[in-house]
Image (cartoon, rainbow, N blue to C red; front, top):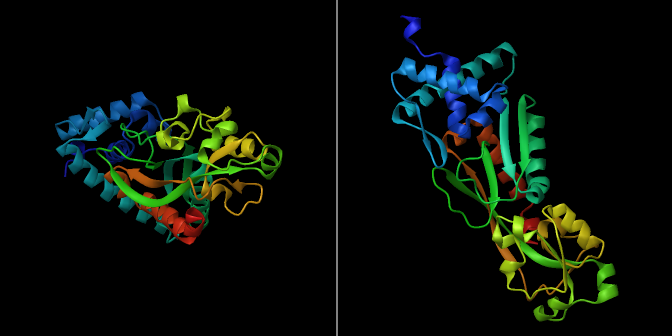
Length: 301
């Protein structure tokens, strides 16, 4: 066998990472190298294979037919190297490497982080990066292995997995209720302060006040962080449109007009098919599902 005619295994593994993340910059960050190096290694691989493995699309880099064949070989190499590493370290733990996940900050802190911590305890060779982002699903695959998003989806070239529903409801602090009183009808909301997302910076319209058809409030406190909104409501800035799972059972938040208003939103996981074939990504997804199942009452509360 002429080894000079074979593609380099490390180049195949780089291609596999590009297939999972969709962007050279994200691959460079993950592998600790540069965009230029990634581009050069892919070009070298294309030359050895005699054709293009990737083509650019509006959704990031996509595999050609040749690229799909090369990725299948790369996945086999990845599995073999993982098994070898486990034997060398005398470990049965097949989960190692880095998984990057994007998630809204509230759901990320409440559900994703506990799931990932539990998974890492069982698999200490696994590294995770959790990026907080409250946005629509990325159409160019934003350089992460897995995206968690809320609201309605418009997705191409990726797989979507339904995780759960949750509710947005109205809440106020006991001190605000004592000082200002609470609205008796939805129309009365116009006489109160209102706490929600910054509408001009909001990608997921369903999370904002404008989409609720509630009347324009007397004043507003808007923040891009859900935790800033929670603190604003707690300190009496007004009535907040908040995820139920962040405040359920907390006596510092009072439900406002619970029989008259609520909004149910879905939570989804989105990933490229190449990412979903990765054992660490599968394990992360399953850990999140377990966390949701164990605490479904909180999401429904």
